[in-house]
Length: 455
Image (cartoon, rainbow, N blue to C red; front, side):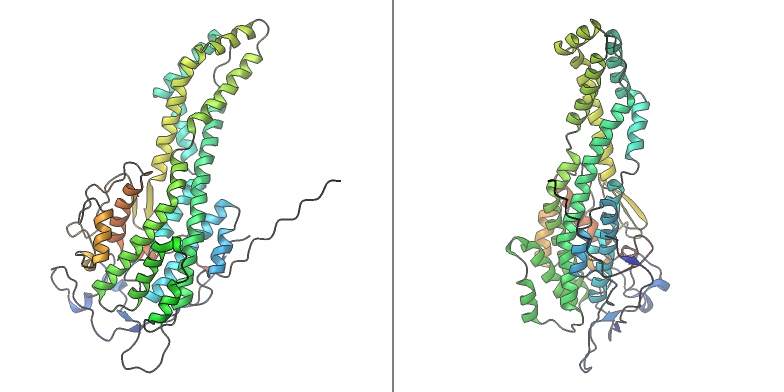
């Protein structure tokens, strides 16, 4: 199946201007000049868009904001993208799909606040680096050829093998072991990328399809929509209920907090669901893979020796003498590979920044002193305060945000809640990830031909 077609996009529906200026943020900063009110701190005045409203008071019946059909994936498109079998092509389509869902949500809720799909665009694009196995093979080869602790361990094994009349360890076998381990990591990341998009992407598409064109909150319609969530998706139900409230909220402080609450709640659901995939990627049975390939290489060398040298080599292997020097090499190789894999996974490139998830989150440019966007510098929503109290180990601070062990859910969430809060008003998060635009629908995968029977 091919990914979404790329081509020019028709313009989205124009949103009507706000009839009045928004209330002043709760923080005690000096009021901005009239021509700067409502502007993001991430962009210059000339790039600013005018404030927008969902409806004009006193106007007659009218339709609310609607994204242009064909510019975002429907629930059916999400399912078709998730069913793609090529993990690389699928990841590219997922990344674009997240962006287009983010853009559609922005049409409904405004782009003054990023939504979860906005962040997911860049996380999925980063996952694609690991899925395509970029850079990691070269880093592993460099270490094998660079000496150090691994080189010393290899030399000790080679010395023993030569004494037994066996050839030195082929570098190709070590690279084969590394490639096998890397395939395990890549598959775990690709599977997680697919799983989350299929589940969460579906809900974003369903939200857009349900509420596009609405001009006011309809409690009965909202309840019917929320009843569509299964019992095991309680976090998603809460999150999208908050998105619906934010869609019609006029107070910019309350709206920003509802958006952050929804984003964090989707993030908690997503990271909880991803736990097994993260563990598979970081705790791949690297030692077993390296040990298995090295054992086969040494046994093959022993079998190739003439009699009686082959018997002496096999006896040495059986006695454990080879294990004494092979085990430290396997340990070093596994440690090095895990270090490379972890460093590779713990990166996130977003527009204008390359974040290292193991380090404390840096404040956004221009917010070195305030840390957070104006409408999120103080938190009053009680549900948001409660969630941040559980997830954020350093309230209203970025100290201690770095995740030293990405396999731990609490460390991931500690980083994520501050990432979402600090970057929520950055308009560049809505940028195109690949500089292109997609068209939908996406055709479903063609069914595989039935296997021919054998008589």
